[in-house]
Length: 238
Picture (cartoon, rainbow, N blue to C red):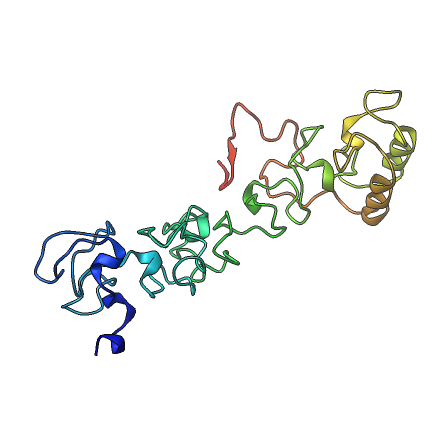
């Protein structure tokens, strides 16, 4: 008969768990803040001899479609008392205050390992509202402080359009490296210390278009963000 029971009924001594039935007691043996059957999902029935920790109870406790260690990345080990993790999309909090919490409930989360619960179009772990290149993954470096990151800004003269004047400036800086002659960090789109093929190809792809797009509300003004009036963080600017 014992073999037909769920695995929660394995002998208590084999797991090093507290002896005696959990039903009717007052101890939270597995440290998950729930005590005994039926409150604790780790208790399969009233005569179960112990409460399994969430990461070894056979249940998808955090509702992310993954159960227990090692399947659920929120579990560090089978003895972990919580399946929620440290990533924003698996931490049990509504980080972006949209009324939806974690993956898969929040559509801004593509997986439980997402570090942002807010929209992130280019998946660079910077929320769109704080991203100076919304559709281009980048390091957020913006040497001319106009609110458009170097990676999506070839408007070197800041006239609102990538044009002939910008081409002439890039040609003058072509093949400059480091701090040598002609070097200007605003031309280094990929921040590799050289102005070369990548910058040229990027320029051709956006010629005739405006810089960006940027998620910063101050984009197009200098400095952006203004350190005296605006604070930008992963959740946005305010």
